[in-house]
Each structure stands twice: as C-alpha cells, then as structure tokens.
Length: 194
View 1 (cartoon, rainbow, N blue to C red):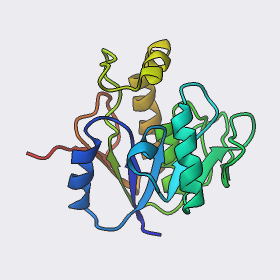
View 2 (tube, rainbow, N blue to C red; view 1 turned 90 degrees about the vertical axis):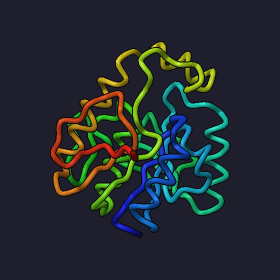
View 3 (cartoon, rainbow, N blue to C red; view 1 turned 90 degrees about the horizontal axis):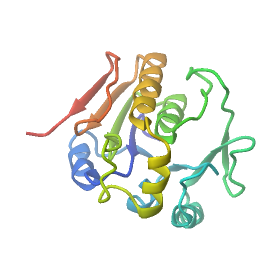
View 4 (cartoon, rainbow, N blue to C red; view 1 turned 180 degrees about the vertical axis):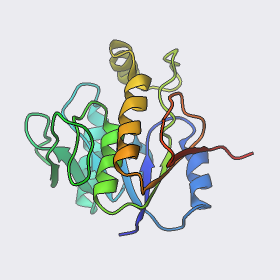
C-alpha cells in the first residue's frame, strides 16, 4: 500500500483532475465514495453507508468491485452495509488519530480512513464541493433531490475537512481544482493547472 492516497469524488472535472494527479504520483492507494465508484470501478477502498442519497447503481458497482478485490468500508452499527468487509467505529466526536468522528458527509470520512491507514499525502480529485445552484449537469437526478433537501453541504465539507487536516497536521492534502468550500489548515492546498 502506498502512503500517497487518491480520493476520488464525483464532480464533473474528475477526468481532467485525475490526469493532473498522475503528475504528482504514479502509484497511490485509492478510495472512493458514492459516485466515485462509477468512474474508478475497482478502487482499493470504497466507502458506503445506508444513508439517504445513495443510488442503487452505486451499490451494484460496489458489490462488483468487492468481487474484484476492492475493500468496501462502512461504519459499524445502524448505518452499516451488510456486504461490506471493512468496518470503522465512528463516534459522535471529532476526527482523531486512531478513531473516527461523526459521519456527516462521506468525503471527509474517506480522508480520515486514509489518514488512519498510513497516508502521508492525499490527492483529491473530483472533490471540489457542491455547486451552490444545484447545477443539474453536476448531479444524478436522484442525487439532485437528495442534495436539495440538505442545504449547507459546502459548510459541512469546510468544517469536517478542516478538522481532519488539523488532526493529521503531518499529512499533505492537495485538492485538484477550485473548491466551493474553504479549509483553514496549513497542510491543505488547492492545485489549479495553468
């Protein structure tokens, strides 16, 4: 397992950002969540819960990836997915070394997982946040309805990712593209190719 990790989100700039990330590292451990499994069909790890907004296609792809060697990660307890093979014990607390904070949004939990599993550098592609206007070209139809029910996702991303970065201040986080959220941490930066 590489100590450089690649987190694959699901926004529409993902293919371009993936090519850019390859310039930073040729080998990495991969982790996805939600729509990321559509693009990266057999990641090393795929995080999923039984919370709302998870499309049936994502579950089908996760099951197929599991057969091909992907580890499907899920929280223990009521949010668990029965077919998963890797469980994390999330708490109501904050992100911390050796543990997991409350799961509010899946992307930051993937970052925690990478940090707890030896990441020294995390490259984030397809992970620039949610468009404030719920741009229909960005979301799947069912995901549009889910995201419109939960305003403030970018605020949650900002808060949760800042907490993760501060808990693992020795890990470098590089987000490809311009995020729609801010992170207040010295070890976080955006990369925009000119």
